[in-house]
Amino acid sequence: MSLREPPPPPQTVHGALELRVAYPRQDVPLTAGPGAWFVVRAESTYVIPARDSTFIFGSVGRGDARLSVNGQDVPVYPTGGWIAWVPLPEDSVARFDIVAAAGGDTARMSLWAPVARGFVPPAEGVWIDSTSLSPSGDRWIRPGEGVRLEVRAAPGALVQLRLDDSTVVPLITEAAPEDLPWGERAFGTVRPGVRPGRLDRYVGWHVGRIGPDPGAVLSPDSAPAPDDSAWAWVEAVREADTARARWPLRIGLVDPAAPPVVVVNDDTAGTGRTDSVLAGRPVPWGTYHWFFPTGTLAAVSGRWDSQVRLQLSRSTVAWVDAPDVQPLPSGYPPPRGRVRSLRLLPGPASLLLRVPLPDRIPYRVDEAEREVTLTLYGVAADVNWIQYSGTDSLVEIIAFEQPAEDVTVIRVTLSRPVWGYRTRWSGHDLELEIRRPPVIDRRKPLEGRLIALDAGHPPGGAIGPTGVRERDVNLEVALRARDLLEERGARVYLTRSGDSALSLAARPRAAEAAGAEILISIHANALPDGVNPFVNNGTSVYYYHPRSAPLARALDRALVAQLGFRDLGMGRGDLALARPTWMPAALTEGLFLMLPDQEAVLASREGQDRYARGLVEGLEAFLRERAQEQP
View: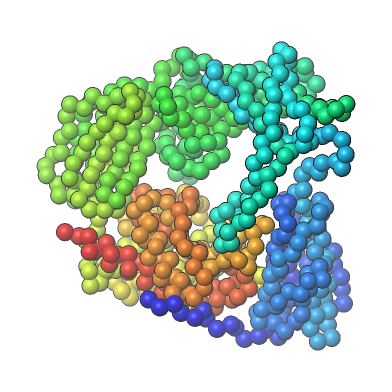
């Protein structure tokens, strides 16, 4: 598969000179005409992160115009689209003076947007940045558990935390370099240089309560008044100068001998529109790592504001959203017990492993190339019987182990690579259903396959400099890919065929209900604020589960060859449309809609055809590779 040239640029547009800004979006869309100078503001919810520079993009209505932003010349693409990467002022408001000219006409606009500058230290004297106090809010921990404290204060000061019982907690300088923004870490293509260490960051460690009592972990008390004497205070002292600030933190304790027990339910309103799965995170507000179905029981060992810590086993915890767990009556015992037997029930399309359990305990499913692993928390292994119910060729062996006294691990080793799986509760029995891989024709790998194509958005979605909407591009690509797939003998299910909005939870659920064997979610990319778009752009594909990595790799190679832009590569992304477990799934980001040249490709018939062909060729390559693994 050779790398193709990108589609040729479009013909130059010769329309009226109309200066528009597509991003940052404005509260009231305005058009600046010849001879006018408009002052407009970014929409009220928009704030530019404090960075050295940021991007702004829009259109001028014609491709032969000249454009400048804050006096800096900006190229105009033949479509009239443009994008600028401009320095930010050291101020709380950024002003972008935009001037476009063509022939004898000139259009002018001044766009104002707030900048999240945060605390600016004074030139002299000792100081404390009260916005940097971490943690803040309400926390509940176990007795003997420590909390890391961080604050930004004047370099060279003596910094300490004073509690209401006269305890003093010293805070010491941590001269670690300042980290890069997450966007640069995720998308950056240029290796970052060595960043100097900061001398204004102080850290400490404390075990026990801090501040006023926050009350019960599942029903916090309201916060007392700011002048309450129970609050902790941080102070910075340098020579005769002292600065003090109240630390807005309440830390309470959870009794490990009598922990509250909760049941998972992410649809307390009974809407029926959720996926009935609650995500668990290794850290508060972190990435998804567990997926607890409605009805799962767990003990609570901590909390940080809206995040509740579930104690899955003695050594494993997961953080979940507080509104999605409901307390059980006081004294309800934490889920515990034994695993006594396993039974495998083969079927024509899948295998069902039935695991009788004492309660709906927390669990996690992991996969390797030819293995599905079920980790059960809060139970010990007492497995006298593993019944295979025959000698199915897909299963090589079922084994178990007990790495800790309250953790049981069950491994199902397969003769072929994992295609998909799902779990469900049947009473207190946990059923792990493993999908049989489809039989693939090596000569015609797409023949008979049922492919789900998800045209990403609405709701939401990116917009290009000239107003091209991502949701429209995604749908056109999906429709073209459908036609190409059907020409090669595949069956296609579209999660949407029109402009109606569809929730993230509904899309993979609909694909699974349709019996899809592969799910592809089609998108166009955009960058977070503060990331340079001129060095971070191109084609990328994302997967979540290991079984989908070969699919993502095949799609990425095919799309790069078809579209002809830089290869940003495949990546693992915690994305709803890449997380389905019942089938291989990937999310494609063909090109960056925010860049004028890539917007033009995505908006063109040829560019959409190339995107669609890349999807089909990538799917075919993946299926052909899997066909070689058939017995």
